[in-house]
Structures are given as structure tokens and as C-alpha cells.
Image (cartoon, rainbow, N blue to C red; front, top):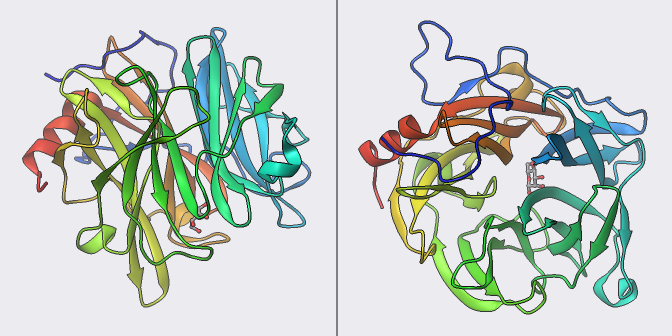
Length: 327
Ligand code: BMA
């Protein structure tokens, strides 16, 4: 039985698989957990990241405001289901603001803790989209670093610990628009400033992941490898359809794919995933895990409008990946 290597976190959200359900990943019955208007300025709140914080939970939430500008807001929660989202966007301190583009827009944040710092990555404007990086210790003030990469790039997702002594990140080079292509790459950095040692991880496949793919939540360390949930995009006759699936990456050389499931885990099938500002989107950006029970709670955006939760068990997901493997 595969096991999570990490902290015991018995207070993460959880709901047992409903009777009669045979899905490996099942949705929370009270979805969505965050409605589009949870703060007064919001047009929509989705694709957001959460982490354990001081015995409770904190997060960086994507809030598109009523100008339809993309912003990131801090959020806090006792139970990781009911969120207190700051009414104003996060404060980003940056002595090089002019050089690195400052904060013109930002979206799809991810977050992990390494040492005493929480590292936040997001899709940042720098003459087009690329990967912004900031650190915080309190989810009040954030210190912006250099952008990790040149434009154009999206879906920068850190590993939650150093690999081979370096910080490590997955990313997805893209274009300046609604990118009709996209593979996942791996990069390392000694200092969160200079990024290199780029490696190819994996590319598109048939069906739900045939147009482009991108890393989702921070990879989850298990005794069988890094468990990575990732989104995949299919181009339908009515536009893009965002589903998500999973694969296992090598623990020491995470650019090596150990196994990758062919079927998706979640595809837009519920009204809150199919109807919204962008229809047919399920977009995972975070996961909370409990090493003792193997429970995983996945946070994903629904239809670019709301935040949703889904649950799974690590051993069942890894079994699914291996049984349906097509590397
Ligand atoms: C991607 C990103 C995501 C969004 C998705 C579907 O390019 O902008 O934030 O969820 O498109 O619109």
C-alpha cells in the first residue's frame, strides 16, 4: 500500500466516498466551497492554493475583480472549507518592481512551505505571462523575487522540498494567448533566483490531454514517487475542456515519469464545472494531505468561477495510475 511521506494532518477536510460511487476521486457533496462573490470586489474566485498554517490553514486565492482584472488575495481558515478572504489583494513588496514588471496581473497561484518560508508562484505579467515568485511567512506581506523564467510560461509549481540540494519547479512554456500547445518541464535553482538544469518531463497524449497539459497542486511525496495531479486540455467543437489526471515522478530525478494514467480522474460534469465564466473547466491548484490516513483533499477551480473540493486516498490513486499506466 502506497504511503504519503509527510506530516500527519488529521484536521484536513474529508468526506467518505458516497455509497455506490466507484470513482477514484470523488467530489465534496457541498461544492462549491467558495462562491464567486465571497468578497465584495469579486467577479469570481477560483484556481486557488491552500496550505497548513499555524495549526489552521492559509491560502492565496485568485480573485478576478469587477473590472475583470486578475488579482491574488490572502485567505485564512480554521477548517480549510470556510474561508475568510482578505477584501484587498495581497501586498507585494519588491525593490525591483520596475525591472520585473511589478504586479500588473497575477493568476493561478500555487504555494508550498520550504524551511520557514512559504513560497508562492503564480502566472505573472512580464511583457506577457511568465512565472512570478514571492515568499511570505505570515500571508500578510509577500516579498517578490525575480521572475523565474522569460515569457511566455504558465503553471509554475514548486516541489515542496529541495531536490539534489536545489529548489525545483515544474512549468509549462506557452505563448501570449490561449496557448494551443504545452508540455511540462522541470528546472532547478540554488537560490530561487537563477533557474536552470531544465529537463523535459512529459507532453500531450490523446483525448482529454491532447491539446496541452500543466502541473496542478504541489507534488505529493509518497514512497512510490512524487504523486502529481495535472490538468489536461481537449479542444472540443465548443472550445477547451479542462480535466485532470495523475502521474508518478521519480523521487530523485523528478523529470522521469514512472507511471501515468491514461483516463482522467475528474472531468467537467457537474453544473458548477460546466457553467460559469469559462465553461467546462476543472483546474486543480492545491492539495492537503494526511500521512497517517493517506487522505488527500484536492482544491480545484470550477468553470473559472468558484472553488471546489474533491477527495481521494493515496493508495487508491497510485493503484489507479499503475493499473492504467501508459508512460
Ligand atoms: C488557462 C488559465 C486558467 C484558466 C483556464 C481556463 O489558460 O487562464 O486560469 O482556468 O485557462 O480558462
